Length: 411
Ligand SMILES: Nc1nc2c(c(=O)[nH]1)N[C@H]1C(S)=C(S)[C@@H](COP(=O)(O)OP(=O)(O)OC[C@H]3O[C@@H](n4cnc5c(N)ncnc54)[C@H](O)[C@@H]3O)O[C@H]1N2
Ligand code: MOO
Picture 1: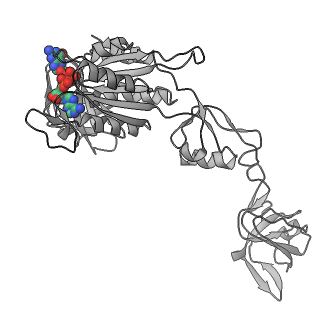
Picture 2: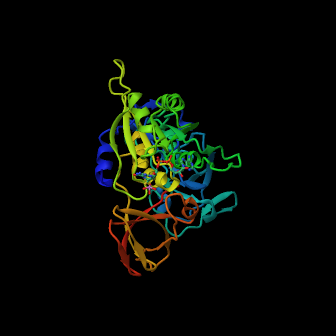
Picture 3: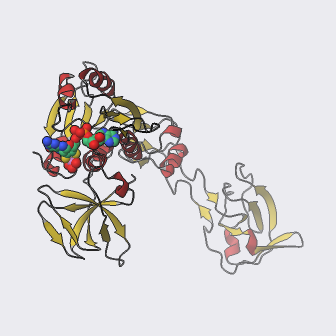
């Protein structure tokens, strides 16, 4: 049986980013850049005023109270026509290009008009004040964004500034979700005796969407070969297929054999982990003569118990989706914390126990182990924002014992 670490290592061997594509800027939020972005403009595009005021001549620095004759008015979007000379000034608005021979700009609030002349009311004028120089933020030809950058609103603005209306990005992963089980009914139905609602499709769709993936829900496959084959074949058309249920040792746990019969190569089955032990991972080759480097479809057979599926998603699937989408597959973010109360954990596998992070002293993270009833108890998870990682063994932890927690991100 794999350990969590060896399972992650095996999955990583099959991860690579999806082929880059060009995408309309408006659709690029949260995508990852696949190519350098080079500016084709200077920013600012000209020496510009950063305030509304008067452009003045250098001679005023020594004689600041000289009354000045107004030459003209320049607004953003227009061009000055006259150079500033001693004894003159130009009314200028924020963003407008400064006239030739401007030494600085004085804010309108620090000026007065007397007898039709402008008088500066500022004790100290410095050379270059209130002027932003052409190209001071970026120059034509400079690389302003690097491959691997995740596009936020900030980057969307910068891309627009440099004219990238169709940036080259790694696309969102297309994730298919397939629930399996004869006992499942749609969430819109009241389950009859022996049945329960399919909560896993919604759970996994939410988790995958929180990673930025585009999700297709394939419904419910029944526990027979035909139904599984039909649904799985549709799922294999995607970048990643998430199945839930049918992967342990029951008579109807047919998922592994059907996957393999459809050409999905198994890389491991079962991880020493609680909950989540029956996890199955495989890949289906998608390379063709014209696309020899096409990444394979990744297939995760998640255990049917909802919390087992959630834990497997957080430990294994989240990183896989991130890598497909061009983010460096970072190691899972874990941090030390102190238990808020005594807790006994039993088992022969490392356990990921739901916890609630509490505000401790500034430097100390506290975590409360929740009263969790096992891998079917999704209700308690609604209060959780972390998984507490306990090693294998029957161990009682005292209050304030140090444990490792893995925050539940965006889920
Ligand atoms: N002999 C063994 N029995 C079991 C083992 C084992 O190693 N040997 N592993 C146990 C563990 S651990 C888990 S976890 C479960 C996982 O079993 P499956 O992945 O085969 O899942 P199912 O049997 O289909 O379902 C388990 C449980 O989850 C409910 N379920 C299934 N799908 C959904 C869904 N879409 N939404 C909500 N709930 C769902 C299902 O009704 C079952 O109650 O196996 C243990 N057994
Ligand atoms: O390991 Mo299973 O996932 O506990 O219920």
